[in-house]
Length: 137
Image (cartoon, rainbow, N blue to C red; front, side, top):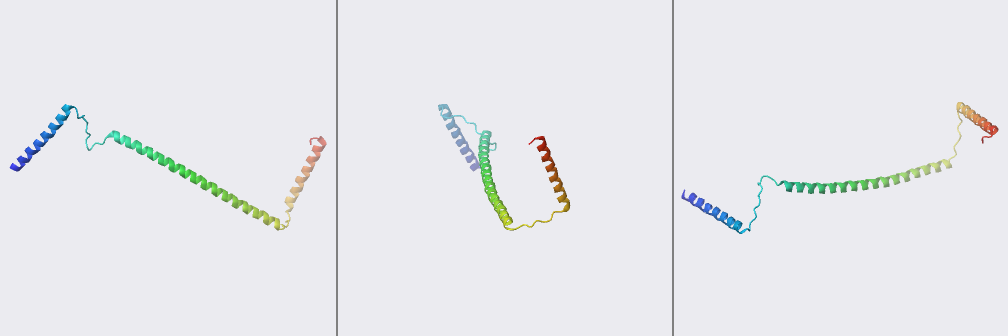
């Protein structure tokens, strides 16, 4: 019991000394009063500042990633389209070369298509004669 009373009075004396030192500093004008926030309540201004800073950084990173992807993708499409065009031209050139070397035999056209072709040819001749007579050409 005596031990607990001794500790109590020692701590009380310590508290009185600390408060006395603070009062002496305040009287001399050296200490400015600062509001200390509660340890469990965060400072809203710090949170706002950190949030804005984080979103700006995230925005710059997102913009950089999007632009980088766009440039790489457009370059990829450009190179592949050039390769594809070259392949198609080579294939068309090979097909043209193959057809010129081979002799294509004419197949006999069906009678119906031949009659229609002759009819169209006759109509063109008649139109041409009419234009010559009228002097349109």
